[in-house]
Length: 240
Ligand SMILES: NC(=O)c1ccc[n+]([C@@H]2O[C@H](COP(=O)([O-])OP(=O)(O)OC[C@H]3O[C@@H](n4cnc5c(N)ncnc54)[C@H](OP(=O)(O)O)[C@@H]3O)[C@@H](O)[C@H]2O)c1
Image 1 (cartoon, rainbow, N blue to C red):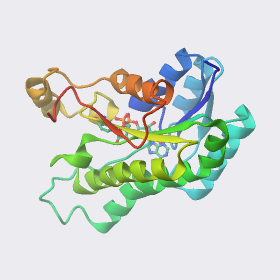
Image 2: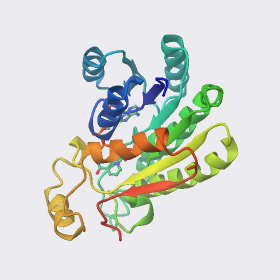
Image 3: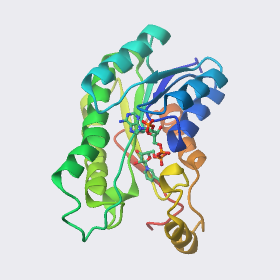
């Protein structure tokens, strides 16, 4: 297979970093991205042959335009967009006052509007390459859990966006999503009780690793040429 150009948003840490490295190991040209952790991004690009790093906050329209422009200027094409960047706030679901409208806006600006805006900005290049998008959702979209109600709702919006966008941009571009369960990343580093709980009840008896998620994202973008509009759950069987 010819090497591809792959942009992974939020790839200085956790699931995004593991995903970018998985594509790079397969010989693809990878573009790392983050909004704040510039040093980590530049270090990853320096130690991953043929890769690049572009700082951009996907919640900002100008940054999204610049990010796609820089990818095309540096690499000449874009084959795969992994919309991994996401944020949350941990708020107990019963604490309605803390989940105020500002929190909803902040989370939706990144998880929903940022993902939509970047996908649209990338679409001409993806159509030209007959490429694909993989969104990183969460099992929180469809369960009664999740770190807060606004976070879970943002991932539910992302699932529906995945299906409708797939319908709108086929046959040139495929659009899929993954829905991880609990994954051991810096994001969940101090969720000790939750890791313990998942390890005790999930059929596979452990939390996920970033690499568990990366391999399914890679497969959706690589070998799954008749799959589009789908959300693949990767949770060790937790939600069965
Ligand atoms: N960990 C889990 O258990 C879990 C479960 C289900 C779903 N997920 C989803 O998986 C994705 C990655 O999570 P993770 O656990 O790997 O998180 P993580 O280790 O905290 O990494 C998040 C990455 O996103 C970047 N980022 C955050 N806001 C951004 C923005 N506005 N623009 C560009 N980059 C941004 C961060 O860098 P900067 O801060 O420097 O920007 C970092 O590189 C998220 O979408 C999350 O919802 C995670």
